[in-house]
Amino acid sequence: MSSSLVPAGIIKFATLYSIYSGFITFGFGVIGNVLNLLVFTQLKLFRTNRCAFYITIESISNFIYQFLSISLTILTSIYGDDATGRFLIWCKLRYILGQTCKLITLYMVCFTAVDQFFSTNHRVHVRQMCTLKLGRYFVCIFICFAIIHGIALGSSYNIQPTFGCIISDHTWVQYSIFFFYPILGGFLPVIIASSFSILAYHNVRHIVRRQLPIVRRKLDKQITAMVLMRVIAFVCLVLPFNAYRIYDINFPISQSMPVAYATGQLIQAIFVSIYIINYMISFYIFILFSSRFRRQVKLVLVKKCWQRWKSWCCHINNQIEPDNNIEARNSQVESEENV
Image 1: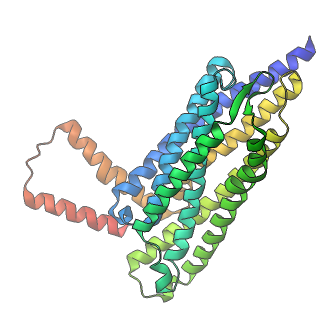
Image 2: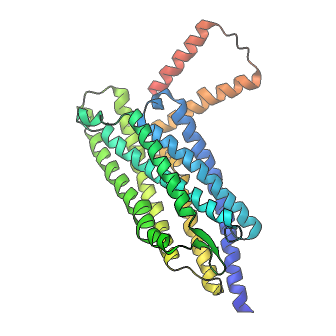
Image 3: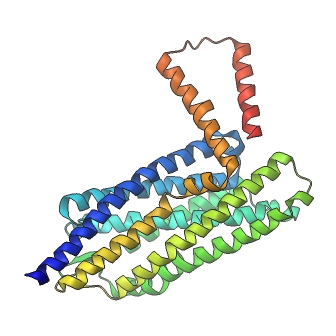
């Protein structure tokens, strides 16, 4: 009797942990990613900045992943598991969306670090190598690659009676173990992001010697610091999950071993909850380590979003005097440049 209660208790705890952690990360993730999108798209300072463009794409990818995550949480609260072992279409779709968003998020962090290195380089021709137009081309190409890769890898998942939703094709198992998790989704983005963010930080330390406008110098310093802290969090959150996934794919646990299976479910819930933080943490890192970003968030929320909401709710007459309108826009531009 007691032997059957132990795995049931572990699975129940793992289920409750997944539900509560899922709803918490979803709430913080939606708020953080929405605020990131507002700041980096509403402020004129960021509209032509390449790093802001990459962070915007990352936030959109994170936003999509958050809804995938909350779907799994809701299904866990209904069925007691994520239902990937019950429906074949959901088994495949879960991993197609998950792997696609994972690659986009990971490599947008890399793109941001690489671009910041080029932007802060003291050589003029190196700084001119990267343009916003070129960055958009690279992002479009990489998103297409991530979608095709996600469809190919996700389609290899099938439902096995004793193991649930796992990769059934031996070739894709070997690919996941030896290339996808350790290299493409593991050490490669970690090495790229960490190396170029450190080099960008080294460049920024000597940025005072260059003849650049003070607004540009402040922006370079701000984004470099934000990117460096984002990369540190990225490394700490991604590597443990990838190590777990390599082990889990290589040594799947059968449901015929109740205690081992229940323990595996609990370990998976813990690693997944840590990994999901990577998709909601960027805004909170930016606001924690950058006082200038905090002022920019305040400017967007107070001067832009609040004023628009107030005008919509109060039904302000659109016929405003031209001089006042121009003066308001000028003051708003000045406040954006001074933050």
